[in-house]
View 1 (spheres, rainbow over the protein chains, first blue to last red):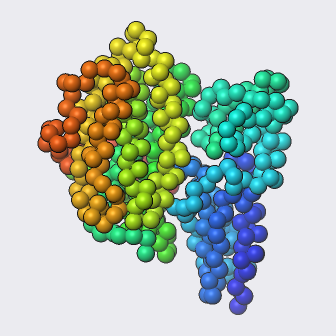
View 2: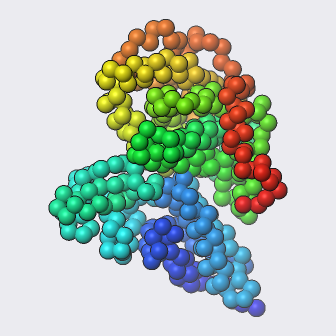
View 3: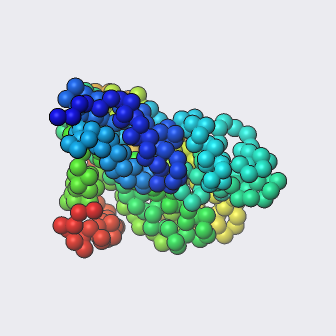
Length: 156
Length: 262
């Protein structure tokens, strides 16, 4: 008989899951994890918020979270329910500093917070929007005036 | 409990889901054939959002009001709602069934639909059906840049001689279909009574018509835009001729092997 997992252990397991579009960035750092409930019988309910309703990675993320959490309880494992919550709404403010740094350094992706020019993750110069629509739903394409680098910007 | 749920509310939510589904499908059909690369990407992203909204709404229906109900929802239940109903059971507006290979039509429809969609989500922003209110909050965060996209193009193209004429011709073709978006659907009266929506959709039609006039700045007097005396609403119970081929395209992969599990 296995003892029921702690909430902390479940959260740690969820944190091992990376976003498929950003290998190396945990979905917890992306602000996708909203709630963890461990019931007295050992069942686990994980509440996630999608970045966008049409994000094609949702099913993959849910499967990865399921696998990671199911491994927490040992061989038998708890029954795990992964839920995409209808609220709250995800915003870029949910990104942690770690996520933002890794996006900037590894992916040349900036994050738009509020109004005003988005600084270039490479040189800090101002960027200007080139296209509202980028390589994925959540990113616009900007160009940096200073270093002329193309910068993808995760939109609010 | 997540809010009121019964057969009437189900019909009401399904009509919204069907519109979003078909609009999303239509947008995706421009990927690779839009006039330039940025528009391939734009229609792809916008279509993705509409399909996401449809999936959210179908999940509310599949969960009988609770998309997160205990035990979860089988993806095949969503597919069944999205692809299996008999054409007579669909509640889509004819505007989103119409297929066009003319980009002017696609752009004008995108604007007409998204302008109406904004008003439609506003009506359920405070819905007593909690997951529907949640969907509205997320949708509005996604929709503003659909409108910015359509308006940005129309700002440039409407004043241009050739393009402007094509866009106005498209408007003339599409307006009679677009007013059908506001046709009362089954369950709407009950949805209003239970607070699932705050008012009938066609109560927002005058505002939509004002926006159409302001946008296109044309003479729309030949088009019936008053909700009270326009052509008899169909309640969206009939399908247009375009629907059959559209459904076949949507089911193309599914029909290759109906027993396959994806």
